[in-house]
Length: 469
Ligand code: A5A
Ligand code: MG
Ligand code: ZN
View (cartoon, rainbow, N blue to C red):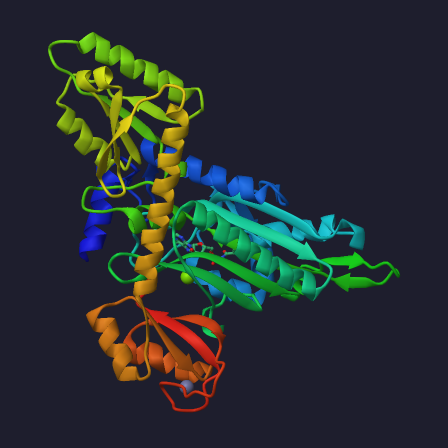
């Protein structure tokens, strides 16, 4: 296990995010702290999606014949499907799959729903659990067998341009989402052999974890007309013809939480972006024998004031050492700590400590501007976290000219390698095997004349590779 892996498992337990002791491999329990981080993260996501998507909720079970209809799709998932075979003691005539994803649950209904060009486009999403019998090593939040937080959006369009544009819109939406979490990413078009089963192409977001491996944190698929043909989803055009629709889908999972934890955490524990932190500001009274009540009263006043702005504030008035409280709230990733002691009250001061850099500042205390001051501090913390995370990602993307160089970088520093590639599947797979990495995909077309680092033929594409989760 890498040092990061160990850190990750420990912090999930210590910060009470996930309990991994549930007696089914790859299935875990969300604890109250984790559930809150998840809730605030999903609030951001729902706010973005609700601008032009409709939230729906489909059944968990999919009949065997529907799942099997789309041949390429089912081939991609056949090793990973859990089956319900019995109702009580009765064997079912038709096996039922636990959804690994919901194309084959939704699209038979889309067949019924889509009638006329005037109905389109349609944009739906749901946030549900899905089940995948993963055979690779499972890890909490990163590779699970019950994905508890599967956001899948599914859209329907009259023409291919509509679907193309939706892919671009979805990429923008995911950018906004990850920006809100201060999580940096690279965006690539996955190589042919790694696209979503049934898609024309897949655009993926990957972030970099501290051990130098990347994590796929989101995918956007252009499905073209493949599923439309399979599920006979057609609409009537203005002139009365019947045409097959074009579709896209895009998904996120528990990995969004894993990335927030993994990207920002440090040796003191969690470091949460203010928008998803269960507690955004903790107030720690610095108490001495004398003037105890006065300090507590003052802290209560500050707490009340900040709460009026629906800020998530916690006054830690437990009867334990302040140092112990600092340590605990730092471990839990609370973005901002306010310390108030008897001398501060006298001098109209307060001490604030930002979790992201553990910097301590003494500020003037003014009741009228308190909220503004704290909000500004929280905004700054978010910005600093984002800048730092992006800088680390950028510093870990290295351009190479040869396979040997790639090998060296991968063994010595990990991270993401940028290189020129001819675009051929056989050559790409050969590279993956030689270097024991994954091609993340294509960033862009090569602008000048260049050579593939592996086969020496004309390069067409700037491509990224990395060791991946
Ligand atoms: N229907 C489309 C959206 C779909 O299923 N796409 S997907 O297969 O790529 O899954 C969406 C996202 O879920 C992926 O980008 C990946 O980040 C995440 N994911 C896939 N398998 C996972 C697993 N076993 N555990 C956690 N996250 C997973
Ligand atoms: Mg897979
Ligand atoms: Zn090549």
